[in-house]
Every structure is written in C-alpha cells, then in structure tokens.
Length: 367
Image 1 (cartoon, helix red, strand yellow):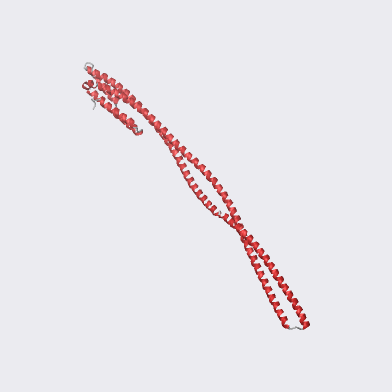
Image 2: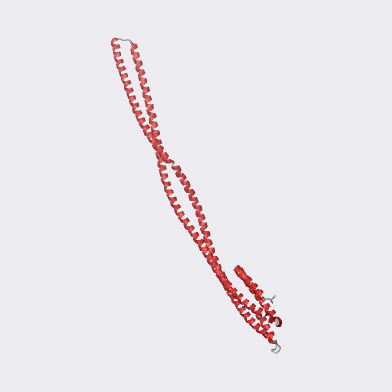
C-alpha cells in the first residue's frame, strides 16, 4: 500500500512541467526522495525485523514445546516417584504394624521366662515333694514294719501264751474264762493289725496318685516350655528378617528421596535455562527495536526540520507522508502488541512508550 501511494505521488509530480515547478517544489521533491529512500530503508528494516521476529518466534515455540515436554516428563517422573513413595510408605506402615504385632507377641512370649522360672521352682518343689514322699513312704513302711513286727511278736507271744495256757489248762484243767479273754484279745489285736495295714495301703495309694499327677504336670509344663522356646526362636528369626527388610526399605526410601531431589534440581535448571534463553531473545528483539526507533527518530527529526518548507508548498505530499507514517506506526504498534503478548516484558513496552512520546514531541506539525 505504501509503495502504491509513493508511485502515485511520483506520477503526479512527474506530470507537472519543469517550467511550472516552483523552487520550493524542487526542494520538496528532493526531500521526498530522501524521505522515500529512508522510508524504503525503514520498510526493509521492518521486513527484516518481521522475519527475525517470525524466526525467533518459531524457535521460541520449538524450544518452549521441547522444555514443556521435558517439564512434563519430569512432572510424570515426579508423580511416579511420589506415588511409589506413597505406596512404599503405606507398605512400610503395614510392615511396621505387623512388626509391632509380632513384638507384642514376643513381649507376651517373654512371659515364658517367668513360666520357666516357675517351672524350675515347680521342679524343685516336685523334687522336694518326691523326696518327702519317699521319706514318708520309707518312714511309713518302717513304721508299718515295726507295727507289724510288734503285732506279730505280740500275736506270737499271745499265741505261745495261749498255747501254753491251753496246754496248762488241758494239763491242769484251769478255767475257760482266761482262754476266752486271750482269744478275745487276740481277735482285737488281729483286727487292729488289719485296720492299720489297710490305712497304710490307702496312704501309699494316695501318695502314688499324687506323685503320678505331679509327674504328668511336670511333663506337660516341660513340653509347653519346649514349644515356647521353639516359638521364641522362630519369632527371633522373624524379627531379624523384618529388621533386614526395614533396613532395605530405608535404603530404598533414601534412594527415592535423592531421585526426587535430583529431578527437582533438573526441573529448576531447565526453567533457569528457559528463562535465560527467553531473556536473551527479548534482549535481541529489544536491541533491534531500539535501533529501529533510533532510525525513526532521526527520520522524524529530519521531517520536522523540513516540515515548515514543505507544509505551504506541498500539503498533499505531506498529508500522504503523514498517512504513511501513521500506517507505519500502527503496524509497528501491532507488532509490538503481538510481541508483548507472546513475550511479556514491561521494559520493552516502557521503552516503546518513551520513544513514542519523543516522536510526538519532535513532530509538532503532525496532529
């Protein structure tokens, strides 16, 4: 559009004859050529800036997609590590709970030591009781033997006396009453002997039953103690196995934590590199924008200096140039808006506003 307007302006100027042209028009035409050359250079710079902006935008989009992909991978790896750590934490809590239950069982089984002590005491008591029973049995047997011997001796004595008395009574014809007394005493002693013998057998039977019960109780407690000792050994082996598993789980947890820290460091490094690249691209675009603004300011100053000469003699050309400059400013503002949306940077916008104010101050004739 700018080139078509420049061609139209050139054709209008060429249609007028050289004799009819005023000297100020010659100056305006020279100024127009100079302005056209600068405007062509400005258009070329603008096209180069636009191409560079497109290339940088594509490069930035590519790098942004790449870093977004890397960040997504790191995020997925982090989520996987967090999920694995969470599952490992749950599993560890379950193992710890199971281990606590096993320890509680172990603590309950520690009572077996008390049972062992009680068993030792019971064994000593049984041994002492057996010794006392054997002693009592020996004393009972000895006493029974003494009683039996005494009764047998008395019976023998009474029998001998009875036989002697019977012989004497037969021989001497004594009274029967003494013989009846002796017979009655003999029966009484015999009954007392049988009663004492039955009492001794009953006591012996009770002692044997008591010894048998104590021996069975001792055997049962011994078997219980053996089973408790075996269970305690198995529990000790389980505790050792769980301790090793806990050590392995702790090492795995430390490895996962170090992996998460490494991934976080890589993420921060990638973000820092992305910010550095973005800052570098922004700096390059800012330098190019400042260079273009400098050229525009020079052109606008030249236009402002020659504005008074051209304003009276060539108002149409000035209006067209003002229209071209206005279109150029609108286009540059549009590019800067797009650039500010894609790369938000308040420094570029502030510099652009400052240069815009300087251009407006340097062009008092342009409303």
